[in-house]
Length: 258
Length: 266
Image: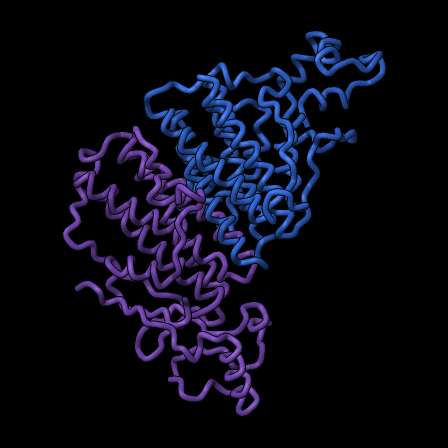
């Protein structure tokens, strides 16, 4: 079943960060307990600044189950969790590609070399985020995004054109996602790590595009790089998740990401 | 820092009796010094020299303006390189290569315009002047008559661009709009780098610190890319060092970027 990912609009009450901080600050003064009105599972940072996390991440919501659905959370750890979700998708896709029965017959030797490399890279990215989040989250048992499930509909993994077209969409989306997310990251270490990954995604996108249409300028085509400014695509999490929605069957929300 | 400047800076009185032109002084080394110099001097060593030449660019401050200024110098270099390449006739016409380099050239021209405007527009005191470039590095390379050399230097410039923008991202963290734009240029450089590498028969991604057949002087473009430790995670754990290092591109510092750029500035 498609469209089960629930991309929900940010609650207007929380779009103004100052307003949100004010609310949590009041709660902090009043009770020192979790923000009133939230369910037991919510992981809202309203306790005293343990480990300097509020100053480090600007306050906000940790990833975790809210109202029965996993929410990606807000701020830096929310962005890392969002990236982890996207890398899970890419890794899963290429895992299926390289393990499909017709892999060695459907693809040229060059295709295979590129696709195996992309499989390796995306699995490494996924495991990197899993490890990094497991260290950075205060309570990874509850806050680490679970393994997502995916459905590619009628995609024929033995069809060169279908696989490469999907790979192109995923890689271009990855580039757009990291380009759009950079400004949402406040910790310089995380910004640099995202930067180390996005250029590899862009290298992938270029290579896939060049496999599809080698005798062309598609590697950095006008459909992704604006021909008047020379700037690549960028997208906000809500735009990206609307695309990823087509492949991810595990419900989750992104209440605190723009 | 032109490699000839570098050689000059090491020359002592007994080797160089008088200060002639750079080309003349080069000749005074004789074959021994020349071959030794050409074979063994990497870009990065130039940072050890004391004598700075007036034309060399200096490290830019760790500020948003400084980041854009360094980026502009690199984009000036790339823009001029591809325009000269397209004019020279060295690029095979009518096929893939020409389409690729016309597209890359268009993007680098756009990037120069974008950065000048981001720095306040033409005439702004923040806009650094275009340096004078020597892409032959004093006659060592012939990129505009030898296509293999043209491709090799293009790869070096694009991979440098990717790493340099990455290194400047943190300097733009306080200016989100500029950071976003820089990231949007950064990924375009990576698309270019991948394609140029593939035109050369290389993988689109950097393996360890392998310079992929580029001249030894290009090694500083790749040093540091062998890193397998990302925030404590061992990227080589699952599929080995090659895949681990391919998966992450590393930044260049301002000083490392400046040292590479200065090789081509006279």
